[in-house]
Length: 587
Image (cartoon, rainbow, N blue to C red):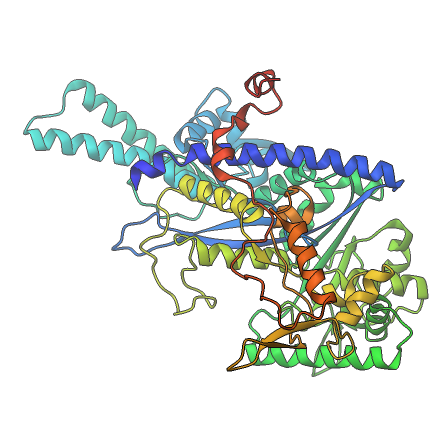
């Protein structure tokens, strides 16, 4: 396995280069199509959420798991996962960072800062956001640097003791210097910056250290902007206080240009499965009754009118004095954001009892929405219709689907401890020891999930929330009732004879399996062989009343061709976009 891990970074780089090339071509196609259709911009909706991964950095006796937070961003319509970034920087050496930041030439300026008050000037240690190591998890950073020096001293003494010799003058000077520097780092951590002591194993098989979640989210969202087509972006996430300090700064230019909106949702994650199914059944029955009461409305119009009629303000009420307060923390309850949160009546994708907030709205509705209190109703018809549309599209289902898939399919990424563990809190002996290997495996799996993972996928309310498009909507509505649509038939063999009869299909529509890259248009697969011939043969059998005709062989693989992994790894994608690429392609 160690030999495999040593070579795992080459397929990671190749697959990431392949994805980068495919996304570049896709953005060009989207821009050309936008110009052809005469649209002012391309609207992209992104779901953003976190996944916690346990890493075994300690010994088996300690049974300690270090949690790494991964920021996941996925396209809501297609489920394509653009990024999965871990809050770990594998490119740095903790000891070198500490040496350069606090023991170098600028030692005084990186330790203290001069301030002035009414009594004169004074100096004080730098706060965390003022220090040059602010983007790292500083307790872990200082501990890693100290442990590396202590580990060097222990290994040196152990080597000389095993040989039965005393320390050489060179080794003695090196160990004394390392011990002195380790004491200084420990003093700086404990008595100067007053950081919490962080226990870390001294095996030191890898470089790198964890970064702050705020920095990870900011870097992930900044990179996301370059991966999607230029245009309008709607970001949907959960109630995370860190996002309030990141999103307005990362998307400042888009906000000023009215090309960005931010939606925040919250729902009951610990709801039992029976409660989830009960709420989903109530939602389906209520929407079906509404559609029967308004038969003249198209599916999208019926869903929108039903949702609009059931919107209500969301707030927390004190049972003692009946006072009302906001549902969110102080970061999202800031005066910079609207106070009104909405109870969503839509119960899908296991997002039960969902509340929706809109910290950043389009300027067309921002002023009117900010004037509303936490318990006000939306009386303006235009504003209510706009909020209704945004409530319908508010979901993080694509990120949840990816998280469930990666936990099931990648064995070293399992949940260790916590409420979500299947068998309770446990220690995972097979968790990744080197986080760089874990990052490589997650990147490889993400590309595989986007381009090679063949599965059915439906966004929440896909059948009901899809905009009306003439015949397409009519066909979807007819296919939902097999008794009305007599063409939805299947053959059923008569026992004891070679005949078959036609009976209505139990399933309204055929399950279509695609990859996220196909659904988003990044990968445009070719049609399978003899597809037209098979379709013509099926049409001839139906027109001739082919109840006695030979049944089509279901074993035939009629799905479009997936990308050939061998050809992808063979081609030099690392040189894509360079003169070397054109030369190697024979151009």
